[in-house]
Length: 164
Image (cartoon, rainbow, N blue to C red; front, side, top):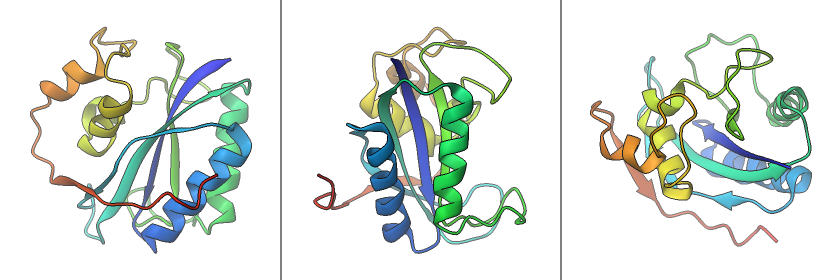
C-alpha cells in the first residue's frame, strides 16, 4: 500500500464539485484523511476564488492508475480539457506525493506545487505535518512555517456530513 496525497480544487460551483470529487475519491480509495477547506484567490489568471484541500489515502493503485482515475473523476464532473492551463476548473485532482517517490513520469512527483502554492502546502502541512518532502528533506510543517510567498488564503467552514 502506498501513502498518497491529492490536491483537490474547484472554482466553479465549488461546494458541489469539492463534495463530489471527495466522494468519488472515497468510493475508489476507501478511507480518506481530509484537511480543512481553504479559499484562495486564483493564481496565474483572473478568475473566481478557489476552494482547495488536500486528501490523504492509501492505495494499491500504481501512479499511472491514480492519474487515470483522477482524470476520469475530473471528466465525470465536467473538466474542460480544451481550456487554457491557467483557467477556471470544475474539479482539479493532482497527485502530490506517492510514498517518498521522486519521478518525472508518468507524473512529476513530488509535485512542484507543494512548495510553490500556499493552497497546497498549508492543507498538506495540516494533515501530514511530520511527513518529509522527498526533495527538500524538510517536514511539511517546517516548509509551511518557512513559507514566505504572499498568497491570500483562508480556511472556510465546510460540511462533510454527506460522507459515510
